Image (cartoon, rainbow, N blue to C red; front, side, top):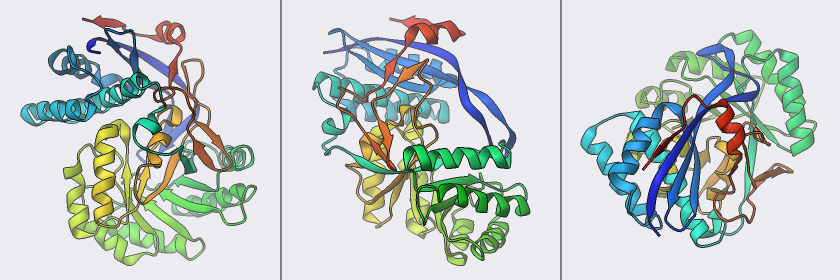
Length: 367
């Protein structure tokens, strides 16, 4: 089996609600993605959802590295793509491209094995603890409460992550509302906050301590800039909540200062930034420091496949229990607070190409 070509189709995906964070409180109703179809000479196609801005890098990597290669050698191919990144020093667009292609390669490998991704990775069927993440700063108090109540009632999610950082009084009030909404499913919901790197370390300490007078916080994400390991170490030492670091980091090297200085209490991994191969490497590195890992949201919640092979796995983020089915479906289901991967070969993503093509700004077949 050899890689022959890639088709990358960009599209605008309508979100299920307006999503906003501290740096973009007005929120957004659409996101711009691309569907990556990695073709082979045996008729199998590897599927991934990537960043539209990385399309040129995706096409270039396939042409330079993957065409003619056996996709089942995915770890070696990930390293070859990473070597291109090191040589060219191209930044995060190339990292995003590597991540998307790595997901597509693992999809091909498990399809070639005629088994689900979790089995190809060496796991048992994952039943991964999951939490609700509303990306909710653009929602009204009523909309936010209703969304978390539905996540607790319909999907059994026992934890929630609230976007904070704009207004201290509103943050306190909404945190209480989120807790009350989640209590429809559990008497002791797990509460997390995300300040979107909008605070200085001292402000993070002051604001978090104020919240901790009223709430038991499991972790704070985005307490300060993710690269500010001295500041995050200061926050970690001053508050009860764990400091969660790493969303958007694309290399193990970016995490090393946090490992060495113990400035992160939870390592957050985003397969959209680091790929599946990089995520597995990072989880093993975190294990060496006895640090738990959490997984950022992924299209179709396919990150559930990884949970069963990650030591010290803690939880994974769910933004939408049921993705935008007009574009793609997934066989990962969210039930009773768990993300459970199915038995479909590959990562379980099935793309509705007709719907995607209808919204595409460009569809290009690269030979």
